[in-house]
Length: 209
Image 1 (cartoon, rainbow, N blue to C red):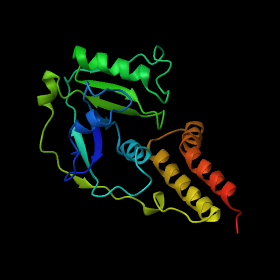
Image 2: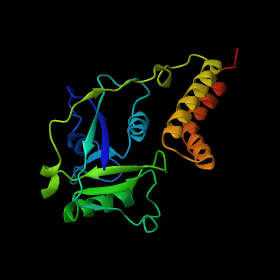
Image 3: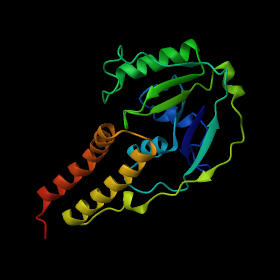
Image 4: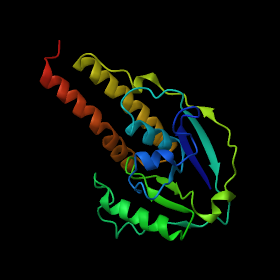
């Protein structure tokens, strides 16, 4: 099994490090339960980085491929019991993740990505005894971002063009995930919703020339 992670190899939060999850906890952890957030595929890792970004192109971003060998312990939560797993406050998932981290019942926690709903994120507990069994010294590869994902439009017309470009890029990512047509369309709608909200806000502020 492989996992992918994107980060800054020369910044405050290293590519393969849990410090960021302590200072800015994610959906599945608290400051008391540090984790390394990774994704089960490269496309999901990119989308997770985009959705948590500020809308500007992240500087100095590199990605790593993490080899998770056979024999490493893992847990897959019963999502039918976590009915509020995608709530914005993350209260239910944080409680679950902290309990999982504290118990050390597995090295890995495999959970759905709230961004895609169709792919997984893989959380690594750096305090688990098996953590040392994950290879170190992983090679960093620069991320090649498409600038159209970040360019700030100055008019509603440009915002519309940018939204269409983002939709095309998301369609390509959906293709790479091998989604069937209904799942692909649901995935695209889910990801496009914030961009169309931005377009509507711009329309309210000033008329389209």
